[in-house]
Length: 336
Image (cartoon, rainbow, N blue to C red; front, side, top):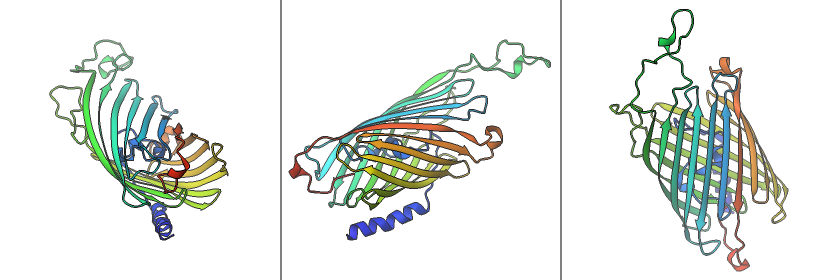
């Protein structure tokens, strides 16, 4: 009971303020793409295996829009439902493309973590990843100042010289996460993640010494059970990468329409705010191991003059596989 009270107090603080920043791709429903937030969140979900997919498209009213896709898979390695510690592994794939030059960002990371149960309600996890990526663009649809003759454009040589139109990099990072697990669905995850710790080279010119800045993340994600059919949730994330930063916080309700085993139905209704950028209403529906949702960025930044406040939709779907365990192994509180 004391543990549930402490979690409830921490959860109220969680709803008060949360901050995030980034230069890598960013998602509004980041709490459904845990591996983008912290490698130590690998395997931290209620189940044994999970697949997640997120698609985002932004700025339809601007001549060149933005397309982002993220996919992940992770799983636990355990011999019982409630071990004192367990290893997890996963993979994260990201793809982002924007502009007439098809400026693209692609990366694949392989992640691993170890989570230790210090008590029945307190878990600490350490995670790390190694991966690589590609940055590229195409010149075929670009136009150049040198083409303008004062009256119209005359296609010809661009006058620009690039050493490369694509390059590759290797990448490493890590993180730590604390899970406070209350009774039933009540929980909070608090973590710190670090990406691009080796700061790989990041330029289309061989002589440039430009580095990909490391990205630090500070995350808080929680659910508080109010009754058999109602929870409240809150999520926040702070990221910083070089001079770039972004602040997101949000929360809402989870309505459990049905609690029947293997027939669970839940509805998520929420709203988030990306400070100085967007207001984000969210909706999600869960059935058994499936969950799918939708959010829309309503642009509130100075860019709204060009976007007419139209940010863009984001869709996600994930599936969680749960192994059936013998009844005698279900007595201790597990990670939900």
